[in-house]
Image (tube, rainbow, N blue to C red; front, top):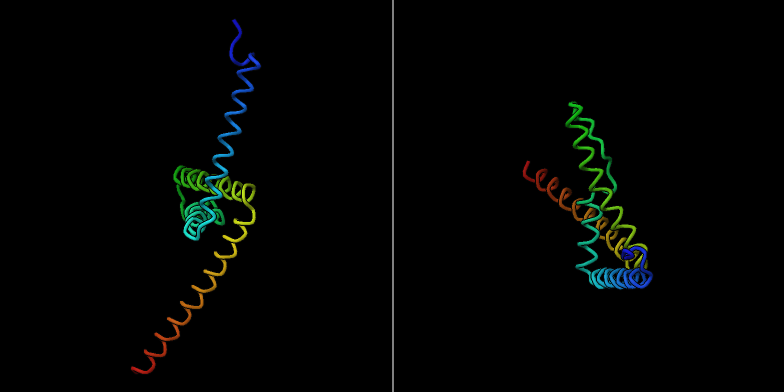
Length: 129
């Protein structure tokens, strides 16, 4: 008896299932990135929760074992974020570029808003003196 690994018909069926699953995952990602909410959540997962732009090493941790565990934990999070980043770039690059542009615009808007709040607080403090 031949195992399923040697059976060409089984292999074709498995490849077909694999292609169907990848197409379904790509469709799901595209549906997610088509919405403002989905783009914000996906970017938050990749950049903020996934720490894709940060270092894995924390130089404040002096204990070797704790530092190694901390670094491994953060490196695992960064690896998942990198996979999500690359998948979005490959599956729907135009939506991913839109998500990145929206993220940068929001960061700029938030920075302006923070500066306005600080300026207003300083001015109020000077007026009260």
